Amino acid sequence: MFLPLRQWKTIRLEEYLKEGGHVRISLHLSVFNRYISDFNAERYRVASDEHAMPQDTVIDVSVETLQNIAKLETDWKELEAQATHSFYLSWLWIGTWLRHLPVAAQPHVLVARTSSKIVGLAIICRRRAWSFGPHARARWLLNETGDVRFDRLFIEYNDILAERSLADATRVACLEALAHHLRYSDQLVLSGIGQDFELAACRTAGRVGFLTEVKAVDTARWIDFAKIRQKGANYRATLGRNTRQAISRAMRLYAERGPIEFRTLEATSEALVAFDLLAELHQARWRHKGSFANPSFRRFHEDLIARGVPTGTVRISRTLVGDQTIGILYNFVHDGRVLNYQSGFLFERDGRLKPGLISHVLAVEDSIGRGERGYDFLAGSAGHKSHLANAEHPLRWIAIGRDSPERRIEAKLRGAKGVLGTIATHVRQAAA
Image 1 (cartoon, rainbow, N blue to C red):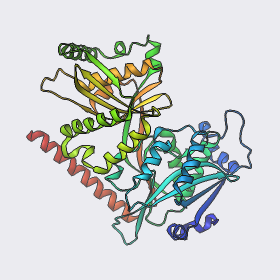
Image 2: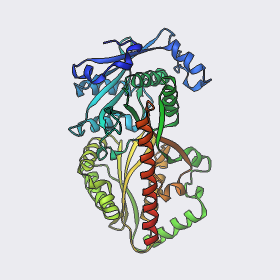
Image 3: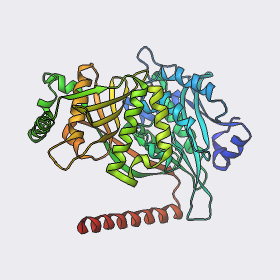
Image 4: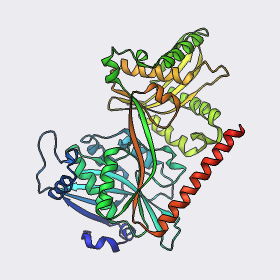
């Protein structure tokens, strides 16, 4: 069903989806190029490595019900091979995520096409949200469910999977389509997105008269191996003096107990056993705040590990001192880059022993030896990240929607809640 732009403000998207239909919006490439030229944003200009797409190319975007996951897998993998994307847009992650969705999740497929060829894909979930005002509100989430517990899987480098030659235009067309179907109080939620996608989203919101609200800001710190190799490929020599001393001291103390070994687990069965120990160590450290307090988190990752270890996309490693495991790293490997997703360490009373620091340093050196491009600690403010990293990527969590008195009141309430949370934290720290 094609919907002219003038009808978007009165359309009820969910009614069409319940009937098995889909909503569509089209973007002409000549319109896109005029749009980006207003900002002099050369990086958004449509071009492939080989040739520019014809100016009469039309990108057709639809939001469709997810009816056949096997068909989606075929389409996704085909597009994945033609796209530059993060691990979190791989079918390994998305397919596993879809198989473990909560019962209440309402997944739909965002599809962008040119002449019936798929050039863009994403999963959009709809979730009803509490509203301060009289209008019912829904949140439309990109590759997330809106279920707080399930979304603790924590997607980063979030985006729309798009064919390389049309990536920027496809993202703009998809954002336009999503923005135009929002009802009065609805929001489009984009979590863990990079700077380029955030810029495109903010510009799209401005074009349709919506506000962009920044929910959270974080930084993914990583190690760019090109910088290490330029200095002779000796990673430890590039670190700060205090960090080098801490590593040397810990290595010396551990060596007194037995040989230090960094072991990557190639067999799925061994990787799953190590994952169980990782969960145990993680929960011992974080208790009820730990990720593994949520049963669905564990089931999802056991499935992901079973599918990813045989292909080398999931890499689980142990750091051993003699026969004792002092650290386990659960990493993803994508496009020559290692992403450190989760870890478990054996902490002891002696603060000079640094199981996390040693495990990461050995993992980085192993990755450099494999000829890989980088080691990413992902988002978060853990102290070791700033000491070990030499580069960073900013990430944003934003929401797009219409301005309204209800939105402003809710924003003030969230602000007050944040202030109270900060005060409570300071009180607990003072009492400790």
